[in-house]
Length: 437
Image 1 (cartoon, rainbow, N blue to C red):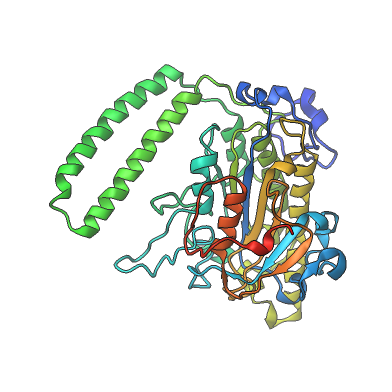
Image 2 (cartoon, rainbow, N blue to C red):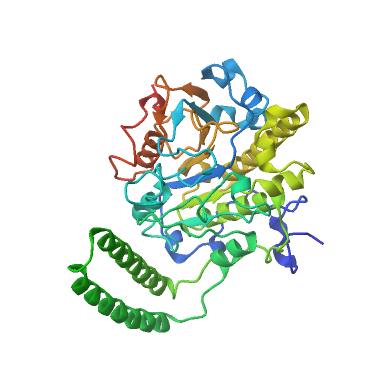
């Protein structure tokens, strides 16, 4: 029995390879919505992938800058060899908002100093994926898809820290992530049983309630302290988001979701199998234009379990204590890059709506909140995808300024995707070294 199925769908089995994963598919009309079929130009997509605890310093990071064809790939990057000409590694970037090595990926995509805002115990800001979704996600069923994973050893021990995913909304609140392949499957393929009329009735009813709350809140505002006024504004922002979500649901209620190309995944997938299936469904979500923005906070602990490594993720991050830990850390690095190479394979083999490769319309960033151990500076950043047409690939780029703000990197990628933004978080500008000559 194939572990990915809870039931068998024989007539669709042609799209599965012997290993149980989705084959590279052309753009199939039966999977697409009516909207997608009318498009003649493929849209830009952004994908943000994040893991915890960084990588093995001695064997993962290149020691010199230059083209990979000249300097070669390190032991840790070797699984990406077939994609070396389409890969960029950027060094010398630091998330200036990250001050706690145990803070995980809490501010990885926001750049906020979550505990350093005067008068607040914890304060985060909008993540770059959600900022991009405000502009690139207006025409799709889902403004963004936010994915995460359940970690048996807890988020802190997986290197992720606080939050529910990599994503944070405009008010700095955590965006819940879909934690399992089955949740993502139902999100993409399961149609809502409520009619458009039912949703519009709910929207009208809830709108009236929200309006009453806002009126009452406005009258209260004059009597509140500055801190309480800020809290009330955040609350109103949350109410507005509820209203927008209801409006979007009503708008898409009569537009069917794409047909599922395979049966419902099992619930017991972990580690490598979980990541591969998440990657494969991400491909379909973009192919059918269900979304154009995806973040994925990947599992760490379950990957080690699947590799039959007895060490916990946090212990493994301190690989300097023994040769056994060092070897296990190197094996983990290779496994992560094998999985990343698999995702790039899928992007390159999938056909987009205009006949181009899906890869050619994507900007994909893979990184971590730490370099190695507890090192907050010089965090890893791997970049691929043909959607960033002005960015050169095939090289390791060492930025001339050490501690270049990581926010500059996110700003560069957003502008490449067509997001109209001049500044993000602690950015001081874009990264000209990434541009083609």
